[in-house]
Length: 232
Image 1 (cartoon, rainbow, N blue to C red):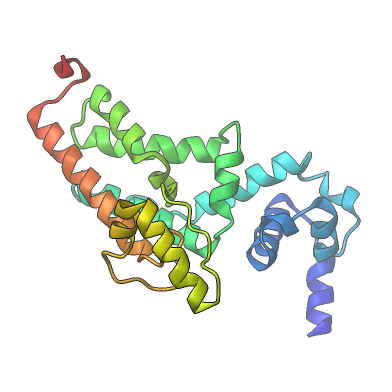
Image 2: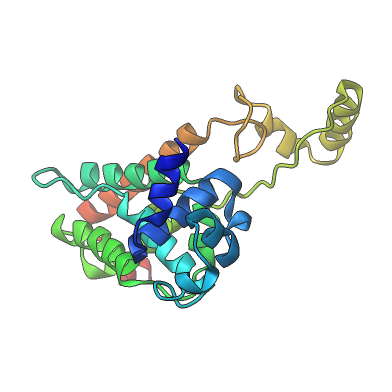
């Protein structure tokens, strides 16, 4: 095993190997674990060797995003636009679930790379090929927002409850007295642990629920021949 690891570390460096090693490092320890020094150590090289392949940390992060976007499955031809878009978005979500740190990095990048632009262009093209006007597609893309990357920004920040059951009960009573509607909807559905949407809600269900609502709405507007001028 040690010989295999040493052999892998002696393999010539290239950009793809550097980026995939950085993704693996983030998968293991989170994005904060990734630095040029820690990556060089993981690859068994000196940090300066990395700069032949990525100019700096920003370029490294851009490349890591490209690796994740490259995992999104391309559209399947021959289907209707709605099914195609749904499958593309859910493929993006599967990629983000494999790499939980990636949403934070995607949001942080100020300038899209050609790989990111190719993904955006492809999603837009799927709507246009489905007969959507450029006007409606413009607004559709705003509505989809970060869902095209497989994640959403949740409206309810969810801090973990205190471990003591009595403290939990006291906190809930205080919250219910002050914020009755929040507590009402927070306790309206069955919950499971480990969710990011708050209170243990089913992340995947909530994601697909919102996505399907949006797609149904887009379909209705498309059939109506909606334009932004029709709002007046």
